[in-house]
Image (cartoon, rainbow, N blue to C red):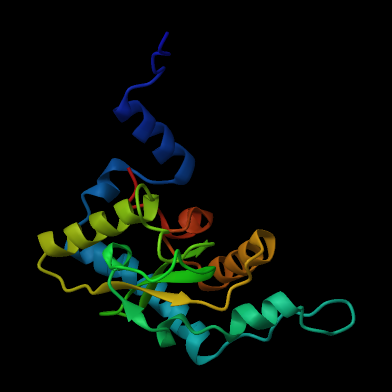
Length: 192
């Protein structure tokens, strides 16, 4: 027997809005509020790029290896790829990677992720794909330029925990707005 949903889609949106600080008005963003939202994040990220803070250290004054590795990665220097990369023929099943979804038009890092198979990560469902589609749609609706692409750092550990640790450090450092960990800081204009 199929379980009936307790809430309708609009009620789920309202509950998520209450939880993450998003309002229905944010989904109908004006061009001005979209640009202001982007600029706040760009200002934050570009400050990190131009004046990186000191790396955190342990009790002995040593920089933990994961912190050193994560902070050595410059997402904007990675080979830029189309978001449709996964449709291309691949010679292998892919490799472990960290990946970065960036609006290259305005140098805005939107999302940080990790995968065990870079060639296959975006096949099927992925929430970030929906956020990017809404982001691009809103730009198109307002006649604004955006160039969303993806870059892969292919030196990621094959073991899941160390790879996820690097991902967590990078999400916290760059405060990428499409990662749920940062929704409270930036709002959630592209989620439903």
